[in-house]
Figure (tube, rainbow, N blue to C red):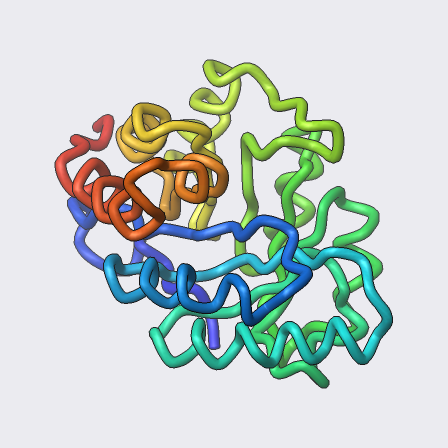
Length: 219
């Protein structure tokens, strides 16, 4: 199972959503909200972040959420935790930094998706593209710090012009989501802007899809 490559279909196709969860401790507590969100909008992949726990607890959380995600047609990716990807039934993992990504490849490939973010240089991004399934630009680091958004847009535009491997742009707002679509992102990652929306996650995702659909890509 792989995240579809938008470049293989007509160029006017809108990017798809890549949904990032908050750190999940109690899978049952977030199941209904996540299920409603996935029913409301087309989501290509869900990146599941896990709160700390022992191995069995982590696997049980992934399995509980995995059923909801995979039945919606989305790929289930874990934020790290490559050691439990197969046992938990996830479709792959997202790694932060080229070193972590390179170390995880033997565990994930060729059966599972391997994506990489936290890429500090163009060279690192190209290395990740050679062996992985997608690269991500613009996501916050462990301290919540992000690159400047203009720099993220520049990196997305460069990638869209040169490379076939899909890129994911991280959006902190609906306006950023639309700008990333215009810049040529294949997928747009959304997280806090969805879960903190007072209208609910389903309404936020629905608007995000609408924003992506009307964004005119830069030619």
